[in-house]
Length: 259
Image 1: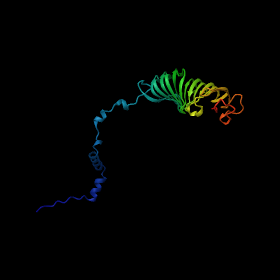
Image 2: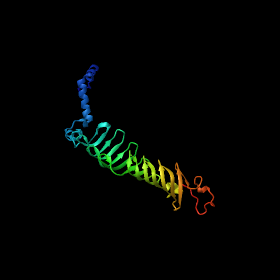
Image 3: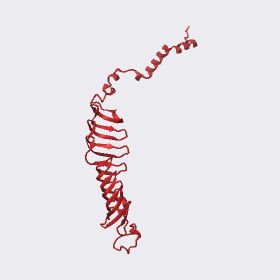
Image 4: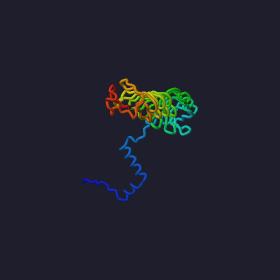
C-alpha cells in the first residue's frame, strides 16, 4: 500500500520562533538580497580601479600643483594655484562684494591681460601691472553700450569713445561713466530723420549744454545753443521745430527738427 506523504505544516509556535529569532531572520534576508540583487556583491576590481588622486583632497597652501578654490583674507575666494600662499598663474579671484577678476596673477596681484566682472553686470578687459590697470580698456555696459578708453572707479573716465546700444556714437570726454566735457555725437539709425546728424559741443553729465554746432546729414550746418539737453538755433527765439514753421520763412531749406 502506497504511503501518502503530506506536506508538513509549521505550527504557530514554531513560526513565531523562526521569525522572531534575529540571527535566523538576518541570514534569510541576506540570502534573498544576494539572489535578487547580485550587484550588491563586493568587487575587489572596483576598489583597485579607483584613482586615489581623485578622492584624496590636496592642500593648495602647501602643494603648488593643487588646483582648488580657497578662501583668502578679507572674504576673498580664489580659484587656481597658490605659491607661498598667494594666487599665482591663471585663475579667478572672487571679491566679497560680488566682483571677480579673471586673468593671470603674480605674487597675489593681477598681472597681464585680464577681465574684471562687476556684480552689477558691467565688465571691462585690459592690461594690469602689479594690480593696477595700465592703459585703456574695453568696457561693456550691461545695457549693451561699448566703450574704449581710460576708466576710474570701474567707469569710463577721460577721453574715449562709446557706441551706444541704439547706434549713437560718441567721441570725447567722459566723467563717471557719462559724456562730460567737449565731444562729438553722431546719431544712429534709431534716430529716424536725424540719422547721420552730428553734434559738436559740450556735455554735462550726458546732456548737451552750451554753444555748439549741429551738422545735418545732408551737410547743412547750424550754430545752436543747448540747455539741459534742449537745443535751439542761435539767434532765433523759441525751440527749433521747423516742421511747424511756414515754408516762406526759409524757402531754401527743407523743414528740419533738431535732435
